[in-house]
Length: 205
Image (tube, rainbow, N blue to C red; front, side, top):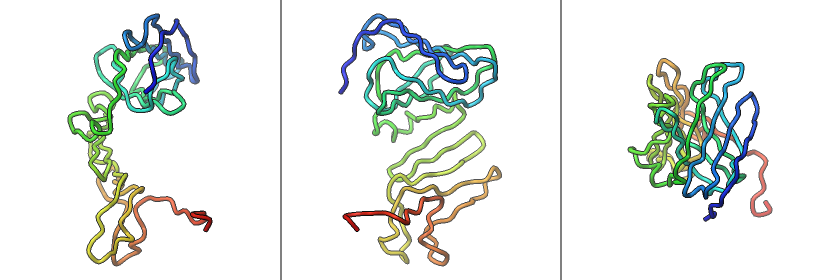
């Protein structure tokens, strides 16, 4: 677990005229991290914002709160960079966020349907996660699912087909399923959208 430390006023400028200001003179565990994002010359829609945090945080998912009280997830990676999606911001305007409590969302909480990452009231995208499948949804319907753990093959297929790490199903805007998996009659080894590792080395083989 990384320890918190006091930090001085720091201004950081990142690409596309997105400017973030961090300010606190108290230990972050007792204070507030303020983040300001300026749109610059362009309207921003679903824009990925990335910045270097001015303090060390454990990798994971945290919560930012904007000026209206709406929440958006902040992902912190192993390089101590913060990542979040800016839903909408008009050209020439700015918005502010607070990270008032250093409270990481645990894996168990991500499985809890009452603590959904994505916060649909803010971003318009909802994330549901169960022990095997992660599903992305919008207000108009399901977009896709990702098997982050093992699937459940039908009785005709043996345990060689029990796997994860692929996307299925993928839906068209009209709701048509565009992918296939675990079909005993047609290429059962094809699993939705996946990566075929055709040139690999394992145990020196």
